[in-house]
Every structure is written in C-alpha cells, then in structure tokens.
Length: 361
Image 1 (cartoon, rainbow, N blue to C red):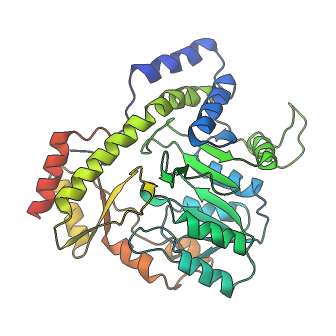
Image 2 (cartoon, one colour; image 1 turned 30 degrees about the vertical axis):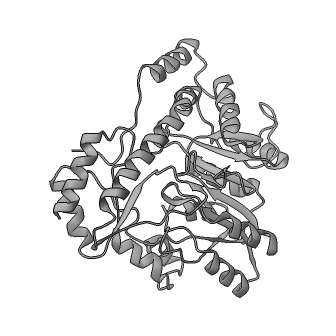
Image 3 (tube, one colour; image 1 turned 120 degrees about the vertical axis):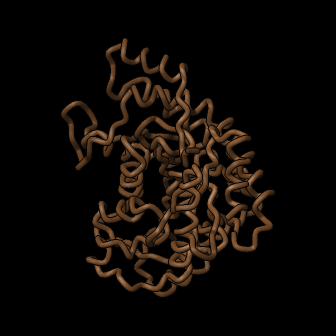
C-alpha cells in the first residue's frame, strides 16, 4: 500500500531527541525557545509561540487576538472541525460562508456578502486549505474595509507563499499544526506566529496557565505547552521542510501533466503568484467518487476524502441550529474530492503506479 501520508524521521531527529532525554529537561525550555526563533525566522514573522497542538494554537490565536464570548467569527464550512471548534472554545459564534469551487478556499465574494448582511461579524478565520493560500489581496481589502480581526488557520500551509509572503503572516496571528501527516511534524504540536507584541505576550500567558511567573497567575490560561522533546524533532524537520515541499511540488507537477486530460476527473485550480506546498494533492471525481476511493484502496493506493461533510452539517453543529444552511459549493466538493499520495516518500515508481491505476479506472 502506498500510504496517503508518511512522516520521514531519521537519525538526525533521533539524535536531537536523545540529547533532550539525556539532559533531563523534557518539558518546555530552551529547545522550545530555539524552535520558536527558528520558525519565526523561516516565516518572516516577528514572534512565534509553540503549543501542544494545531487546535490549541487556533484557540490561543483567537483569544490573544481579542475574540470574546458572543463575538461572531466568519469562517469556512469546508475544513477540519477544529477550525470552527476553536471559535466555540472562545464561547464565540461561528458564522459560515461558502468556498470557491476551483480552489476550495473561502470565497472573498461570499465573505463580503456575509459582512454586508451581518454588521456584528467581528473577525475572520480563514483556512489555507490543502497547502494553497487564500486570495489574500482581496481578503486583506475586506479586513481593512470592515475593520476585522484576521486569524489564519495555516495548519496545512507550512512554507506556502502568497506573492512571496508566508501564509500565516497576514493577520493578527497565524496557527500551524505539526501533526504527523503535516508537511513537517513534531509528533504532536503547533505554532502561532504574529508581529503584534501584545498578542505575543498574551499568547505566552495563555499557554502556561495565565502565569507571568511560577505562581503569579494574572489571567485564565491553559496548559498548552510544547515539550523540548517535540521541539527537538521540529528543529530538524524545519531544516528539511524546503526539500520536503520541493518533492511534493515535483509529485504534484507529475500528476498535473498526466491526469489533466481525463474528462471524468478535475484538478484543483492553482492561484497565480502563489507557491503551493501541497499538504494534499486533491482531485475531484465527478461521478461515483466513493466507488473510486474503494477502487484505489483495492489497488494499493492510499487515499482519503478531506472532507466528506461540511462542518455545519455535523451533529454538534446541528444541535446548535446550523443544520440546513445552504453551502452548495462546499456540499458539492464533499461529494467529489479525494486526495492521493503526494508526500516526499512517494517515489517515481509510486507515482507512476498511482497514475496508471487512476487512468485504468
């Protein structure tokens, strides 16, 4: 089976982890700080704060950016549930608008339509889905026009660029995930980047029980710390990230050139002036997608549907009254999308097999 994802961990990561284990300093410490500084340099952000997961990164990013209970936050219905859940964690109110059919990213036209219809919307939480940045020129114009807080869910966008600028660096804060399937990993873990000094200071307080010192707790905070062990893995993975992403792009280009002429399959659009990092290579199968998924698996091709349901259609959100909201584009994508292996461990032989199996369908 060619897996849909495969983290690459070798002797370099193991060596750094053993150094931490031998030091006895396992929890948050200087290795985490080193990782934060390295990640900030990589993205061009002023500050970076490491966390225990991508989800906690989103939660903290919203809180530190000023989201309060009852605030309305506009976001996408086509994403992993953690995106919208992070709004609920703040006791704020998710508001959804549909996505672009070509890119699967949140649609700026529908953003503005939602903002015109609801003047109480205070913030925008966007997702750079599958590793491609949103249309940031248009989004930033809306942020400025409507005086919005902007938080970027960059969990799938490590190293992705919009006109030379890293995804996650446009808004008040950007949140990344280091889950094992991501472009780089720390096993678990996350990172928040920001250029705002106050956001940075609040993030550090929120991460460690709201404490300014050992027992000087000045706000309600959480135990959202990253460990030195995870940071040690992250430091090595960060050094490899550009190479990992380059290989992902090579694999994606191969698929583009070999699958673009199939009339029953559609490749997602690429925005101009963007550098896609291909967290996923996602195609749209216009008929019998679920049968196609089973066919791939039967032929040794790992694949996965990201995402089979819109967030507002999930049971939790139905209970909160979101059931029945019209998101025709997202609903269509839920029925058609499937991702195929694009990660750096996919060999030339693997991708040739993947293309052959797909064409044989």
